[in-house]
Image (cartoon, rainbow, N blue to C red):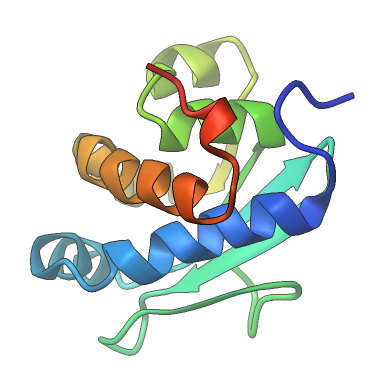
Length: 138
Protein backbone atom coordinates (compact mmCIF):
# COMPACT_ATOMS: atom_id res chain seq x y z
CA UNK A 1 0.00 0.00 0.00
CA UNK A 2 1.42 3.35 -1.04
CA UNK A 3 1.89 6.16 1.43
CA UNK A 4 1.51 8.85 -1.26
CA UNK A 5 -0.27 7.46 -4.33
CA UNK A 6 -3.79 6.24 -5.05
CA UNK A 7 -3.00 4.75 -8.48
CA UNK A 8 -0.29 4.56 -11.15
CA UNK A 9 -1.90 7.38 -13.16
CA UNK A 10 -0.98 9.85 -10.41
CA UNK A 11 2.64 8.70 -10.44
CA UNK A 12 2.68 8.90 -14.23
CA UNK A 13 1.29 12.45 -14.25
CA UNK A 14 3.81 13.58 -11.62
CA UNK A 15 6.91 12.06 -13.21
CA UNK A 16 6.07 12.82 -16.84
CA UNK A 17 5.09 16.38 -15.90
CA UNK A 18 8.35 16.83 -14.04
CA UNK A 19 10.31 15.46 -17.01
CA UNK A 20 8.53 17.83 -19.40
CA UNK A 21 9.54 20.79 -17.25
CA UNK A 22 13.04 19.55 -16.47
CA UNK A 23 14.01 18.79 -20.04
CA UNK A 24 13.32 22.42 -20.96
CA UNK A 25 16.15 23.37 -18.60
CA UNK A 26 19.25 23.59 -20.82
CA UNK A 27 21.57 22.47 -18.01
CA UNK A 28 19.52 19.38 -17.13
CA UNK A 29 18.98 18.49 -20.78
CA UNK A 30 22.71 18.75 -21.57
CA UNK A 31 23.73 16.62 -18.58
CA UNK A 32 21.14 14.00 -19.49
CA UNK A 33 22.18 13.93 -23.11
CA UNK A 34 25.81 13.46 -22.03
CA UNK A 35 24.98 10.00 -20.67
CA UNK A 36 23.71 8.80 -24.11
CA UNK A 37 21.61 6.03 -22.57
CA UNK A 38 18.11 4.63 -22.43
CA UNK A 39 17.09 4.73 -18.77
CA UNK A 40 14.08 2.81 -17.46
CA UNK A 41 12.46 3.49 -14.10
CA UNK A 42 10.48 0.49 -12.84
CA UNK A 43 8.25 1.53 -9.96
CA UNK A 44 6.10 -0.72 -7.79
CA UNK A 45 3.25 -0.07 -5.33
CA UNK A 46 1.70 1.20 -7.60
CA UNK A 47 3.35 -0.38 -10.62
CA UNK A 48 4.55 1.82 -13.45
CA UNK A 49 7.37 1.95 -15.99
CA UNK A 50 8.78 5.29 -17.17
CA UNK A 51 11.60 5.55 -19.68
CA UNK A 52 13.90 8.35 -20.81
CA UNK A 53 15.90 7.90 -24.00
CA UNK A 54 18.96 10.16 -24.20
CA UNK A 55 20.64 8.24 -27.04
CA UNK A 56 19.65 10.40 -30.02
CA UNK A 57 20.89 13.71 -28.69
CA UNK A 58 17.34 14.85 -27.92
CA UNK A 59 15.64 13.32 -24.89
CA UNK A 60 12.42 11.40 -25.42
CA UNK A 61 10.35 9.96 -22.60
CA UNK A 62 7.09 8.20 -21.89
CA UNK A 63 5.39 5.61 -19.72
CA UNK A 64 5.04 1.97 -20.69
CA UNK A 65 7.34 -0.33 -22.57
CA UNK A 66 10.63 1.30 -23.60
CA UNK A 67 11.53 1.49 -27.29
CA UNK A 68 14.57 -0.75 -26.83
CA UNK A 69 16.61 -2.68 -24.29
CA UNK A 70 17.59 -0.23 -21.53
CA UNK A 71 21.19 0.67 -20.78
CA UNK A 72 20.20 1.32 -17.17
CA UNK A 73 17.18 0.14 -15.17
CA UNK A 74 16.32 1.70 -11.83
CA UNK A 75 13.84 -0.20 -9.69
CA UNK A 76 12.21 1.31 -6.60
CA UNK A 77 8.86 1.70 -4.89
CA UNK A 78 6.77 4.59 -6.14
CA UNK A 79 7.00 6.06 -2.64
CA UNK A 80 10.80 5.97 -2.64
CA UNK A 81 10.81 7.41 -6.16
CA UNK A 82 8.65 10.25 -4.81
CA UNK A 83 11.22 10.87 -2.09
CA UNK A 84 14.07 10.80 -4.64
CA UNK A 85 12.38 13.23 -7.04
CA UNK A 86 11.60 15.44 -4.03
CA UNK A 87 15.33 15.42 -3.18
CA UNK A 88 14.48 14.03 0.27
CA UNK A 89 16.05 10.58 -0.11
CA UNK A 90 19.75 9.79 -0.19
CA UNK A 91 20.17 7.76 -3.37
CA UNK A 92 23.50 6.25 -2.33
CA UNK A 93 22.00 5.08 0.96
CA UNK A 94 18.92 3.76 -0.89
CA UNK A 95 21.19 1.69 -3.12
CA UNK A 96 23.11 0.37 -0.12
CA UNK A 97 19.83 -0.57 1.61
CA UNK A 98 18.57 -2.19 -1.62
CA UNK A 99 15.57 0.15 -1.71
CA UNK A 100 16.87 1.30 -5.08
CA UNK A 101 18.20 -1.34 -7.46
CA UNK A 102 20.25 -0.22 -10.45
CA UNK A 103 21.12 -2.66 -13.23
CA UNK A 104 23.26 -1.76 -16.20
CA UNK A 105 25.79 1.07 -16.32
CA UNK A 106 25.13 2.67 -12.94
CA UNK A 107 28.10 5.03 -13.29
CA UNK A 108 26.33 6.98 -16.03
CA UNK A 109 23.11 7.51 -14.10
CA UNK A 110 24.86 8.34 -10.82
CA UNK A 111 26.35 11.39 -12.57
CA UNK A 112 22.83 12.85 -12.57
CA UNK A 113 22.38 12.75 -8.77
CA UNK A 114 23.65 16.33 -8.35
CA UNK A 115 20.72 17.44 -10.54
CA UNK A 116 18.09 16.21 -8.08
CA UNK A 117 17.75 19.65 -6.50
CA UNK A 118 16.76 21.07 -9.92
CA UNK A 119 14.44 18.15 -10.65
CA UNK A 120 12.76 18.63 -7.25
CA UNK A 121 11.69 22.20 -8.08
CA UNK A 122 9.96 20.97 -11.25
CA UNK A 123 8.56 17.91 -9.49
CA UNK A 124 6.95 19.97 -6.73
CA UNK A 125 5.50 22.40 -9.28
CA UNK A 126 4.00 19.46 -11.14
CA UNK A 127 2.55 17.99 -7.94
CA UNK A 128 0.80 21.31 -7.29
CA UNK A 129 -0.54 21.41 -10.85
CA UNK A 130 -2.04 17.92 -10.63
CA UNK A 131 -3.68 18.51 -7.24
CA UNK A 132 -1.17 16.50 -5.19
CA UNK A 133 0.29 19.44 -3.21
CA UNK A 134 -0.57 17.56 -0.02
CA UNK A 135 2.28 15.12 -0.66
CA UNK A 136 4.99 17.75 -1.28
CA UNK A 137 7.80 16.99 1.17
CA UNK A 138 9.27 19.97 3.00
